Image 1 (cartoon, rainbow, N blue to C red):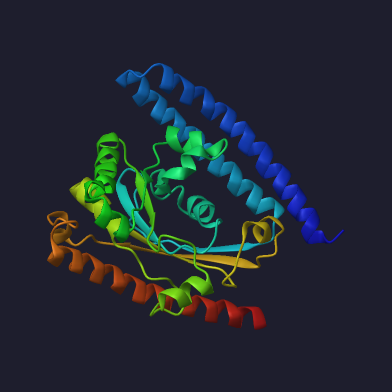
Image 2: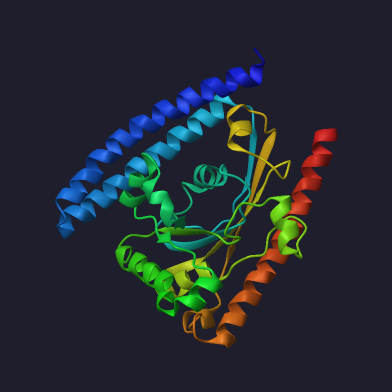
Length: 301
């Protein structure tokens, strides 16, 4: 049996076993939170649930460190504070991305909440975990849908505002994969994307978080994820077939004017946010090209 298959079997068993362990503990407190919907109980359960999730991430990192040979590179700036709230914007390459971000930044920023498609709440086992950990579920309405159903405009903004209220006393990191979907060459060509390594960014999700959380955000954590190949799947990760993965992180100030605008109804504000996002993506595209060159050259040495 090839070594990569053995590694894949061991990784799958370990990931399944420790995920089941943490999920079982998480379910207990999720049930308490559901059955006793009193504010003090919910608040304490929320803190405990975060500690459980952090323990889960720590065990993920331990397994990754000791079972697979994939090298992880993370460039993390000074100034991040786990007691402050952030908006985290990232490109999206693979199902590995949330795990890679979590294990790399766990000690540097508060616990993560990922924007999730609403259908994921029905995902076996993990859907309940997403609900218990207060992940924001977004519907991602298309422009055509909103034209036919104008009453749905602003629902994602309302979701972001509810998220803000939940975390008024508890710092959080709201993660937005701004491309809205995982990168593939087919999607890249269909979009006629102006970037070499990225899809076009969508500014709406970030704008909603900025509008809802306002001056409680300490900044924007700008993450760029890079793998050696464009198509990197979770099976390759489990089997240790990915030689390296890189995460470049920059801490950016949030333009103060963004706190006052209305993304839905103010076209000038909307254009400013979109232009800001395009600038981030221009730099991100160059960062990916640089990292690919550096690691390509290193592999040939």
